[in-house]
Length: 318
Image (cartoon, rainbow, N blue to C red):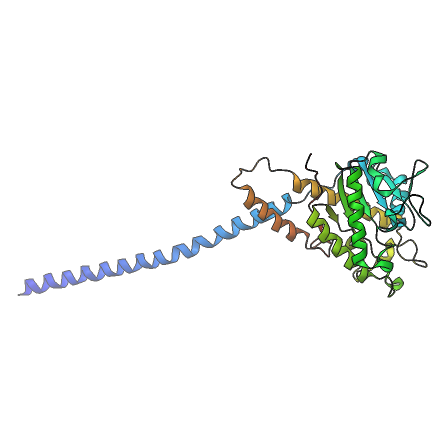
């Protein structure tokens, strides 16, 4: 009898010890994953995001990129012409076909029309629509509207802008056409006749038209305005007069933005060379989001902050 009692007690002791050891293994099994999983996510996510943001930036083009460009504009662009003629580091050897009081409307007038204000090139009066044809330029940058919007309104001015685009391409079908937004005016020079709200309304129509047609749209407006949306006083050369023309500093900011803008255009239209075809769409989407995030701290985050529409006219026969 005593022998059987001893055997029973020994069996119970072994069972109890086994249960304790099993419980310890379970505790370790549940603790280990929590201790090792967390560092893995934080160590890999941040570098990947940072790399994409950096790679999305394109260095500004060299000033010589504009050697085959012609700028069509009014007296606002004449200031850029004067600045560039004295400093070739701004826009290289870009050519300018401009005239005071020129607009989208009177640019379409006949050469001999009464009151015409057509530009001159090498001593000859020419039509703005022939700027590329006459100068031999491959790129045409247009900025007009300041002399139209107050008199004719945004909608009517937009219709004339469309006609000018068609005429430019009828003379030079292989050019790349770039529309620049009309620039702002000083806040204390605004009136019911012409103000920054009306200018902005026209720019929105111009942007939509360029998107529809595939022309480049470059928002200069929000690169030279202040926090209120009016022309930055530091960039204005005529604060006691019209409040619309630019100082050398203003022209420099304008030219620098153009160099950065066309770099984005060129970068965005280059086909991918390294990434496999199956990965290209995902990479492009990631770069797009990263690019927008990286621009948030600057002045080119949205259509109201210097956005560049990355489309431009490419003829069918190119």
